[in-house]
Amino acid sequence: EAGVVQSPRYKIIEKKQPVAFWCNPISGHNTLYWYRQNLGQGPELLIRYENEEAVDDSQLPKDRFSAERLKGVDSTLKIQPAELGDSAVYLCASSFDGQAREFGPGTRLTVL
Amino acid sequence: GDSVTQMEGPVTLSEEAFLTINCTYTATGYPSLFWYVQYPGEGLQLLLKATKADDKGSNKGFEATYRKETTSFHLEKGSVQVSDSAVYFCALSDVTGGFKTIFGAGTRLFVKA
Image (cartoon, rainbow over all chains, first blue to last red; front, top):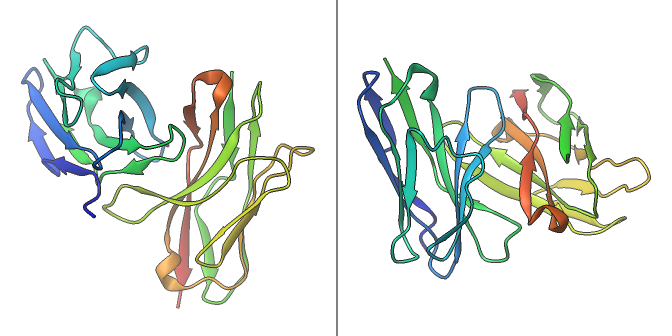
């Protein structure tokens, strides 16, 4: 069975440019998460979806970040405009039971 | 709020040495506890978990026991291999927090041949 799929794996952009990340969770996992992982730190939750509903977006910087999961399966995370401090690894994860997470390989974003 | 504290790394060991990575937590409820491992260039993978006090999680030779009295979940392995070199994250998930998972900062392990 395929794991969580993310693309792209790497992205380099200049500040003020937009960027989007895509995630396809494990089939049957209704819960989907987007995390940001800064260098040398653990993942920090940005947003959690239950099916197509965003049930926890309290840590999402809504002035520049947006996310969607229109059909309750795959999801996109967008940053517009990107800032230097957004450089990080963006991890997507999914869960069947709401506890253990299955993580994707992440997208490493570098903002110049 | 809930939190997880791990020992700082990096931890450098020789092959076949004994490994301990300390993890303590604070939580308002009765959380489930996890260890995740992240190999270079990859996402996190669940290594083991324990859902209640005195439970022992184990996988691939790694073990951790949920100690409620000391609020700890230390990761141990009797004989490490070079292939165990990775970053290890302790985490908790608490139903009172809506199953929001809190991760520690991670501990990097280097195993030398």
